[in-house]
Each structure stands twice: as structure tokens, then as C-alpha cells.
Amino acid sequence: MRMAWVVAAFAALVILLAVGLTLNPREVPSPLIGKPAPAFELPLLHAPEKTFSHKEMLGKAWVLNVWASWCPPCLVEHPVVTALAKSGVAPVVGLNYKDAREDALPWLKRNGDPYQFSMFDANGRIGIDYGVYGVPETYIIDRRGLIRYKHIGPLTPEVARDKLAPLLQELNRAG
Image (cartoon, rainbow, N blue to C red; front, side, top):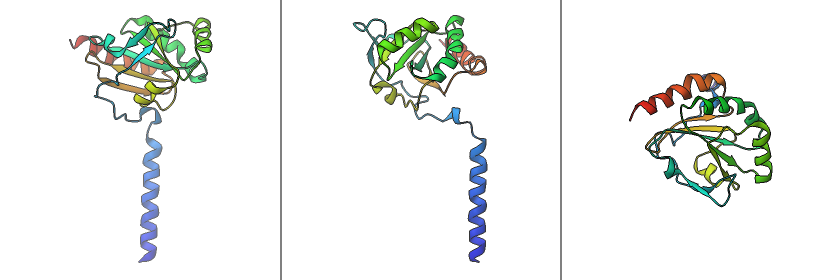
């Protein structure tokens, strides 16, 4: 009888591990999906004397891309973010996360600045409010200020084409 319990426990563990291996780590469910985006007011990266508040985006669907100059995957996704911004499907706003302004500004100058603007979150406080696991991360926020989608890791052309663009088009149609 004892051996049957051990075999059953081992089988259950194997099944759990097998199911876990089929999950996509980029699609970690966020408890913020469908909830209001956390409130913030941050200085702008390019103009620290000016601030930006989430309230300024109410009434339009938009993309929040969390990035940093010290983040190699951010450079990998940069062409995808640039193409998304150029598509005009929605404003793309950057959240420069736990970075130094003197590193971030030259990084954008060197690699191109796809953002309508970037906010400067030097201590990572807003990133924590958004549940940032690491950079890069991308959020879609609707007209009412609700988080509708979260992507962990670098965006790929396929994710931008198959998930972000259709969702943004839907949100833009839904008045």
C-alpha cells in the first residue's frame, strides 16, 4: 500500500512537470489585466522639469514599453518597438526603468527614439506598481485606462503583428 502512494505521488509530480513544460513563460498571467493601470506622475526623460501623468492618455488606447539602456533584450526588441510606433496604430510611450539619464539619452540617440516620449523611473517605483518582472515588458492600456495586455520579454515581429496590432485596432474601433 505504501509503495502505491509513492508511485502515485511520483506520477502526479511527473504530470505537473510535464504540464509546466508546455506553458509559455512570456505569457505569465497578470493580476492587473482588466484593472485600472496604476496611477503615476513621472518626469520626462528628455525634459526632467516636465512631468507626465497616466491621466493624460485617457481617451486613447496606448502602448507602454518598459526599457533600459543596460538591458540587452531591449536592444533586440528595439526594431519591433520602432516599427510599432511608425505604424501609427497607437501612441508608444517609454518607461525608462532603473536607469541613469546619462546612459538612457545616448542609448536612444544611438539606436533611434521610437517613443512619443519616455518617462524616467529611476528608482523603479512605477515599474513595481505595474508588476514588472524585468525589462523589457510591454503593456496595452485602453481608452478607459484599463490594462488589456501584458507581454514579458522582448517583443517579436510576430507578437506585434498577431497580438498587439489586432488588439490595438479593436480598442481604437471600440469608441
